[in-house]
Length: 94
Image 1: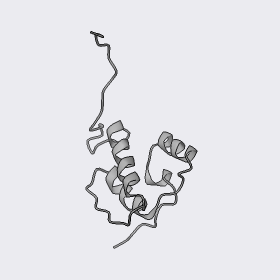
Image 2 (image 1 turned 90 degrees about the vertical axis):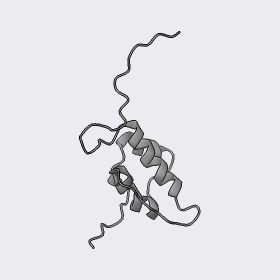
Image 3 (image 1 turned 45 degrees about the horizontal axis):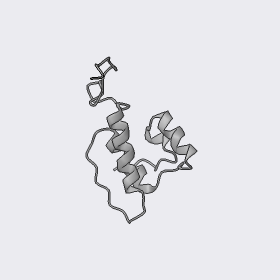
C-alpha cells in the first residue's frame, strides 16, 4: 500500500481557500493526524472511519468536511455539486 505522507496544512487537504483563511485567522493552521487521515476521503464523498482519543480533532474533521460538502464547494463525481442551493431568487416576504 502506498500511503501518502500526512498533509502539513489544511490547504493541502483540499479545503476551500476562504475556509483555510478563516481557520488561519482563528489560529488553526495545521491538521491533527486524524484530520489529515480522514478529510481527503470525506471531501471526496467516501465513507470514512476514524478512531482517536478524546481531544484529537475528530469533531473538526467531521465538521469541516460537512461544511465544505453542504456549501457546494466540492463537486460531485458528475461535476455538479450534490448539495447546490442554486441561484438565489426572489420570493414573496409574506
